[in-house]
Length: 138
Image (cartoon, rainbow, N blue to C red; front, side, top):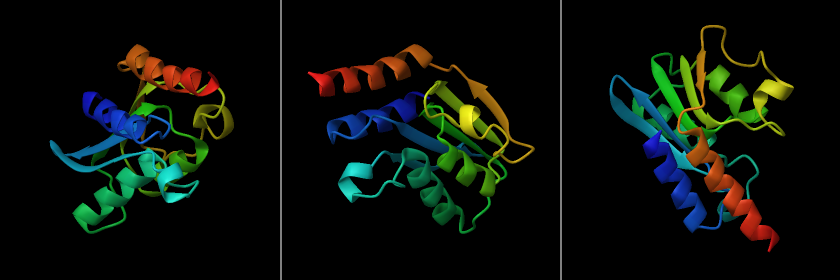
C-alpha cells in the first residue's frame, strides 16, 4: 500500500485527485498508475485503469488471475468492473469511498473468486484525498 500511496502523491503533484494503484504478481510489480483524468482529459483515466493496462502489457495478456491490486481508495464501479473483467484475484484498498465506491453501486461486479481486504493504511489514504479537496475549496 505504501507504493500505491507513492503513486497517489504523484497524482497530487500533478494536481490530480490523489489516488494511486500498484498491481503485484508473484512478488513483482507488474503495473502501477495514478489518476490522470485532468492530464489526459479522459474520465476513464483512473489509477486502477492505468495500472491494469500496464500490468496486462507487462504480462502480455488480458487476464490477471494471480495478481493483487493495491489502491489507496475503494474502486469506483467502472474500475471494479475492469478489475472483474481482468479476473484479478485480490483487491487491497485503503480508504472507503462512501459516495462513489463500488460497494454502494455494484457490490457484485467483481469476479466471484476475488477477495477484498479494506482499511490498509486507511487514515493516511483518507487524509491525502480529504486534504486535496479541502484545498480545492479554499
